[in-house]
Image (cartoon, rainbow, N blue to C red; front, side, top):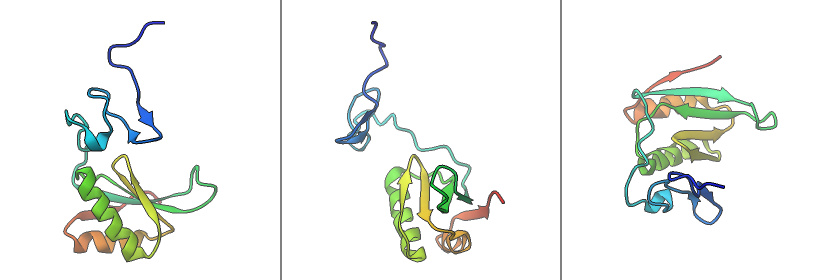
Length: 118
């Protein structure tokens, strides 16, 4: 079997996502090739149930923030809604149907937000 020059470890259960260039955890990446997720500056807030066993999750996409700032914003949104959630791959997920409250909180923080989906 041939080894790809760019291939290698993508995910480790010990440290999470890995950088394909320097092969360090993304948090400790030296080359900083992990770019900020592309976004147009408009936060799109939608509701999803697919793949979650029928549970409703409010999803925020389109914010062009670095991972640390996105984590802080995710924490603010979760506390404003009084529920749990996570930040994965540039997307903030908050458990439950909190679209209106999240849009209100985002506009208070100076972000442009709009409702997406049905």
